[in-house]
Length: 412
Ligand SMILES: Cc1cc2nc3c(=O)[nH]c(=O)nc-3n(C[C@H](O)[C@H](O)[C@H](O)COP(=O)(O)O)c2cc1C
Image (tube, rainbow, N blue to C red):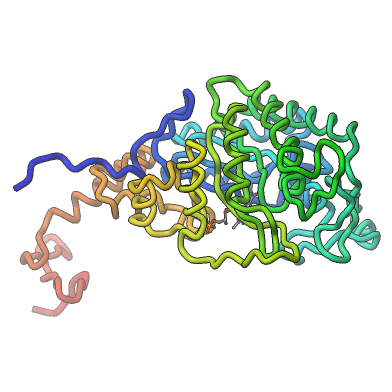
């Protein structure tokens, strides 16, 4: 018999990012909820994000949270643009932290994708008709005055003053995030939102220092990273979500992402969260097939070529798949969105599947104690053991293992 203790799965090995330690490498990926009230989260977010902390997730991101009100996609998107928001988020973060998870926020600005309905109404642009029901349209900002899709609302091209104000909004939202108790900030630089709109030659047609060359198109992303880093304490990690490759017909590819990652690293970004898509054009770029782990290769390339910590995301559902991605050195963190939605106790089940010594360590002591007791019950009698279930002080009924019957009560 081999007595060498089995190494703990990498998925459940703590990771230290600056001075923040996550108990494992499972991350709840950012998920917009479209239920905020003037930017503020409520009961839905407390329960929705709280449940992922309850089941042992290492890092729990909330939703994309706008740094300024006009940077929301819908009237119901989350924001952190007022000081009154701080206490609303702090309440959720205190709960998440009390359960052993690291609370994390994704800050962003949707740029030209502003002023729309949510996904249940196909993200249709708001019109003057919607204003009558309280959903007043507003004009989005963008690098160039080009709508996100043909016929969509035309945004205003940002001038130098807008850019200055925008950077100030990032600084303020960063300070509010710290005040609300977040330990990690992620800059949303993906999915066709403002930063991505500047990065992509499809949406950025500027002729000033923010457009044209790759260096110029990256300028806003880098200035935002600098602005956030200026405010974020040195011991807190900074993530950046990138669309490593953009949508069908897009132009931005992995080599651009590697260049961006290197430049972000120099500005104090610690982790690149490798997503994709969001901007499409007329070029030859094909659509990405949505197969399990379809974006893992992007995380591997950035990790190897830019020497950065990376997060893999996208149709990762199987614990062994998640573990293999880490073991093969393709990424350092595994983010899940829909799998956690479908199966909030995924971390607990993954710990069992990967043979962790005590999977129940992941959940609160109150639950762990009951679950350990259940395991003890399960081990108490080997299947097939002759058992009788008492039905009264003098009546015992044979138990049937074959049907897992509770006991059939026959007259003696
Ligand atoms: C309901 C929902 C909301 C999402 N909202 C965001 C968001 O706010 N920011 C973001 O970067 N990605 C968002 N995403 C994308 C996820 O973070 C994730 O990258 C994507 O769903 C792929 O991972 P999965 O296959 O595990 O779901 C969202 C996904 C879902 C399902």
